[in-house]
Each structure stands twice: as structure tokens, then as C-alpha cells.
Amino acid sequence: MNAALSIDGLEVVFDRFRALKGVSLEVKSGDTYGLVGESGSGKSTLLKAIAGLVPAASGTIAVNGKTLGARRDKAFYREVQMVFQDPYGSLHPRQTVDRLLQEPLAIHGFADGEKRIQRALDEVGLGTGFRFRYAHQLSGGQRQRVAIARALILEPSILLLDEPTSALDASVQAEVLNLLEEIRRRRKLTFLMVSHDLAIVTHMCERLMVMQNGEAVENLTASQLIGHRVTKDYTRNLLRASEGFVRTA
Amino acid sequence: MSALLEVDDLRVNFPTRTGLVQAVRGVSFSLGRERLGIVGESGSGKSQTGRAIMGLTPPQAEVTAKKLAFDGIDLLAAPARQRRALRGKRIAMILQDPKYSLDPVMSIGRQIVETLRTHEKVGKAEARDRALAMLEAVQIRDPARVFDLHPHEVSGGMGQRAMIAMMLIAGPEMMIADEPTSALDVTVQLDVLGILDKLVSERGMGLIFISHDLRLVSSFCDRVIVMYAGKVVEQLKASELRDAQHPYTRGLLNCMPRIGFERHPLPVLDRKPEWAA
Image (cartoon, rainbow over all chains, first blue to last red; front, side, top):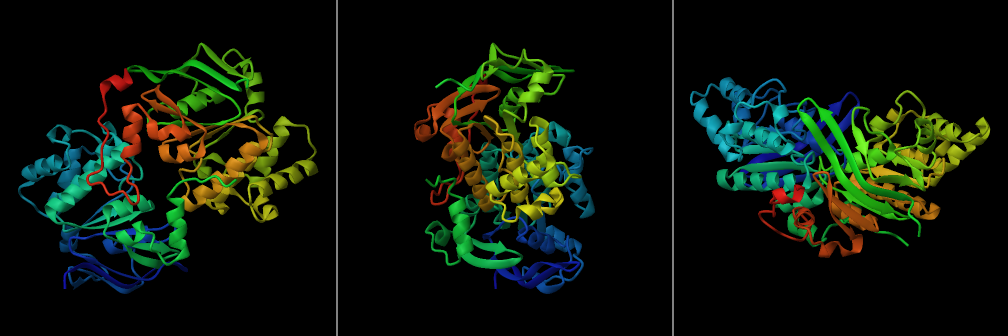
């Protein structure tokens, strides 16, 4: 079996609110899988549950065939890394890029930090000139590149991407999406990507899941979506909405 | 058609420790009773243009223009008192996120009534009736219930509708909408735009729609102004967007992924220094 990530009947409960109601999905190794839905649909909660940032009430999560326990071990974080939506909020404001990138290396006891930092910065197209800058000295796109470099520095096999470009301008978004695709191809990574934008998801992903109210509405391939071969009204609404405003006379 | 708003050579400068930051550098356009879109990326000066017209530029900034006139009134020469009377009454503004732009400790109904009674002499009962009617006009199903709710008790789409109701209740002639739907879900976005579109055309208002989303703006507006680095790089009819001449406009259109158009990698903008010159 070559599933990089398989989730079965995952439930997440906050007090009495069921944020995820038994969601199952399987992501093949090397695939890009998209999660689409409106705010409150549970798509980000699903990513956080995988990363261990919110506790699962029931259900199982397996990474590369290994079922995860309630606590994630160090080995898990070497395999799975996450990139967050807001590059302004996810980088420490008082640490230099160098310091930010050293932290995961120190935690995991890597000796060749120097080389890895240089390589990671080169890989995301920043170069070592950015090494001793602070987050506030960078533009939004550059910050997101630093966040991607931080995720890549441990050489994970799976990246969890939570709306990685929604805080960026359209032209910068294109650059970051291209970067992500290129890295995935080069390193043969598996992506699980959350977005509210159907166009981005169909651009990046082979398969996707539409979510609403903590449940899976529909599983689709990108080509089904492009050909409008969808079965649920909710997905159809999303598709129509993504085509822009149409004036009704 | 006489112009509702005339802007000629508008400049907004921020003096800072490291020198003058020129946010808006000589923007000119005129607005009739139509829908005009202003598009640009962050830092292009689109929001500062809107704020300068509204008179909401921070006090440390300098606003200059050869002409900035609303219905013949010179806005830069007008005393603060007159500008306050215009603001909210004849020129209204919708902001991006209802979570931050509505008063969190005041019920939605009271905020709407406050706007109305600031600008018109109406009794309490009448003000309440008009606020309820306005909430109904923005397609809120149960206006009497929403009237008594506080902003944190309603969804983003509902909050933005309440905001539109509040802005329209005094019957403005011109509305500036600064990213009115960017904080909303896509499906809600269309509902809110539909309401805005209907009310604006029914009342024959002039609308300035500020957004970063070129495609959305072109589907909603009659005319589009594209801004880059504080300047207008292109002005065109929304229907002629396909024939945009400026490489920045074309690049902006091109770089967004579209359903059914596979392009790997996406074309990226190659920013030329002469665009900002």
C-alpha cells in the first residue's frame, strides 16, 4: 500500500461542537490532495488534527502506514510539516531568518545546520542574503518563502498547506504556487492543501474533497471538477461562485 | 452627464523618518452615476485614494490635488464641519471586514439608527422603522431579530449586509466600497455583491469599488482603473478588459489560476521599473 496519509472516521469535538464528523480520506504518496470549503467547514481543523495541534475525539490517522497515537513523536515531525496561512503571524517577529531556521534543526539534532540553511534558502529562491533579516524586513511573499524553507529544512515527505497563498497578492501567489509545485516535483513530496479557492485547488491538485459543516460533501478528481461533472448542489454552487459576479437583469 | 466626483492630480504623501513616502502620485479620474472599479495590489495606493476622497487620511499625511470636487464642492478647501456633514450623508464608505468596522458594543439596529439621526431630523419610532426597512432591503430575513443583535452574534455575510444598510440609510449619492467582499466566503460574496449592485442601480448612485481582484471588479463595474505604485497605469471599460494594453494589467489577469485552463507553471509578473516611473 502506498498511501502517504490515510484518515478513517476522524472526529474532532470542541466542547459540544462537532467540528469534524467522521471524515475519511486517503492521499497517495506523491499526490497533491485539495480540501475545499467555506469558513467553518472543518478543512483547517482537519489539517490541525493531522499535525496534532487539536486532539482527535475518535478515528485513526496513519502516516506512511503507521497509525499515530495521541502524542506525536519527533519522527512524525520529520515526516510531516505544515505551512500556515498568514506569513505575518507564523514567523517570530524578534528572530532572524537564520534563527527561525535553526530551531527545527536544533530540536532534531542535525549537525550540518549551516549547509542545510543555505540549501533551504536557495531552494525557495531567497538566497543567503536574507539569512540575517527579521520577518518585518521582508515582503509577504518573502515571508511565505521563509515559512516554506522552515518546513522543508527537515526534509519531510508530507507538507500540510493551510491556505498558503490567500494572504498574498495575485502576482505573488502565482510565484509561491509555482515554487510549491517545483519543490514537490523535485523532492517527490505529498501535499495536503486547504484552500477556499477552487481555481487554485484544481490548478495544484489531482484529487480534492469538498467539505461543508465538518463533513465530506464530495470526493472529486480535478478533471471531474473542470468538466463540471459534480453530483452535489453545494459543489455546483461553489463552482458557479468561482466564475465571478453575473448581473441578473 | 455632469460628473459627481472630479479628481485631478491627487497626491497623498506620508512624511516619515526615512523621507517622504508617496502613496498616491497624481491620480486623475471622474465619476458619474456609474460603477467604477479601482484595482491594484497591496501598496498600489488604491485604498489611500478612496480614503482621501472620503477625508479619512491620517492627520500626518499631506493630501494635495489640482482638483478634488464632489458635486462642485471643493473637498480640500471645505471646512471640517462641512466635510463631516458630507461624510455618511452624501458620501458613504463600506470597509472590508464587518468584524472590525462595526461597533462591537452597540447593537446593529442602534448603529443604523445613529447614522440616520446624525444626518436627518427623525423621531425614534420612525428611525427604527426605517432601519428595519433598510435591513429588509439588504435581504436580511428577520430584520426585527437582527436589529437587536450585536456584531459578534452575526456571520460575516450578515455583518456586511448590516454595514451596507447602515451606509445606505441616509441616501448617499456616492459610495466608496473598499474590498467589501474580500473577507467573505465565495458564495456569500456573490449574494452581497448582488444586493449592492441592485441598491446602487435602483438609487442611481455613483460607486467606487476598490479591490485587488481584477476579474471580480471587471464583472461588476462599468469602468476599471488599474493602479500600480501610486499611479494609474491604465483606464478601460470593463468589457474591454481582454484588450488591456498595459503589461501590468495583462500580467495581473494572466497570473491567476483558472478552472479549465491548465498552465504549469503559472505565468508570473515581470515587474519593470519603468511602470513605476
